[in-house]
Amino acid sequence: MDESHGAVPEPDSSTVVDFPAPAPTISTSSSLLHALTAPPPKPPRTSPPPFYNPYPYEPQWKLDRTLAKHEQHFFHHREDYWMRDIRGFKIRHVKLRVVTVVINGVAERQARVRRALEEERLARPPPPAVGMAEMAGAVDFATADGQRGIPVKMLLASRRALESGMQNPKWKCFTDWHRDTEWVRIKWPAYPEHTAPRSILVTRRVNLRRPRRPVTRLELVVELAGVITQYYSEATALEPAPEYAHLALGPGEGRVSLYGLLMVGLRPAPDGVFDIVLELNSASADMKPRVVHRISAADLDALLPAESRPSSPAPLEVEAAGPSSAEGAGAAATPADAQMPVPKVERSATPTL
Image (cartoon, rainbow, N blue to C red):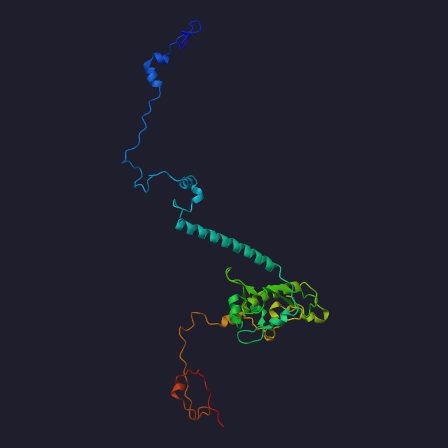
């Protein structure tokens, strides 16, 4: 066996490169500058003592075991389990609060959608059906004192005055009517061509959670008052029929004023439309205008001044009647009659026969 087997060869001195020593620098030569520029040594990392607790309360739980996989997922994805605790149970107050907000939000959105659909449906009322108005029947109006019809002047008054002036304002109308609207029109003899029907609401909604209810007589009268005033404003710009020129509507002379009309009621028509029955208000026509006399300066001078007026009225005196008086004969005054004030009358001398 070769003697050199297993021996470590010596390095070739010809291949060894001698690197020059590094040149001395100012940081290595000056210990003071090295102490100023070198970073301070880091203190060794230690754990706090067992009595140290920066939180003022005692720890509620201790990590005395290795977390399970679902627990680690719970801590890393806390936003996905915001309504549950670490054990997986739902937090009651959070659940109630969230469920309440969600339910109220859903209910509010449903109410908005329902209101929008209802307004859209009421804006497009169905056409009148033949024979449907006759099934509802007629509606008559009267004043609080039993007079037939309601004057249009009362319709244009306040709602409280109308309620106190009409008869049975709280009674329900159209209780068997299965629609929310109805068609009404006015047929005035002076305008036979102007009979376009109009749609009015005959139901009301008090609360969004409750269904619509039939209107009362007061609410129906308010709706009809708007139809009458609109018809009057349109008819004033039209030419009346020659044979009924005396019934022309308008504020001018020789025309029928809006205050001279009387609404009697509603009458069903065969074509499914209700006719508003209007008549001339005879009560307003029979009223005579009050005559106001002009007061002259002489009448003002004849008035007593305030200084000369008595502070209290003078007591009334009764002059006793003589036995020879024809009026006082046989008229004995009772104590009750003696207390009643009788104005003093100056009597003339007793006439002789």
